[in-house]
Image (cartoon, rainbow, N blue to C red; front, side):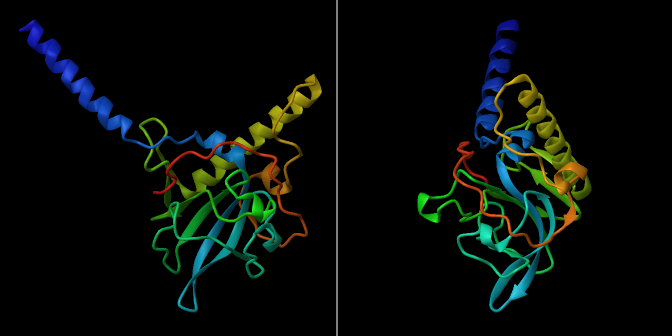
Length: 209
């Protein structure tokens, strides 16, 4: 009987392990926020025969149409319908994450497409919805905004510590006001130039929800 129980446990463990291994590999939210050069909350609008994305809040970085290889209209975002943005609908809100390392050289440092996105459904978002247990997490949109802002403050504090001690950091400059005071500041136009190719963090596979 003891041997049978042991075999049953091993089989169950193998089944659960196989199920877990089917999840996609996602970084922690803290890591992802660090890799991003732009994080914005947008509202989807009907436009011609499709949709467009109105920038409502800047959570990280400073929005400008000049950041994008396909330059959008002022106040709007260029994004394709993948990486969590499948079948967008007018009236929805979506949080878009843009990193610097997932764009071809011919864009010359401009953003070609978003790295991932999180659709707001019933006031909630799910981080790493296709990820393994332990990384996947549901947030209210307010808590998600606060969590991103918390990571930005921690990253800035670490960059200051490393600068003082003579270490190195990937965070090159003091965050903008929206990053210091908390994410969720109203979107405004900026004359800032696009981020370069300096960040080369690898993209996690399968960023779709």
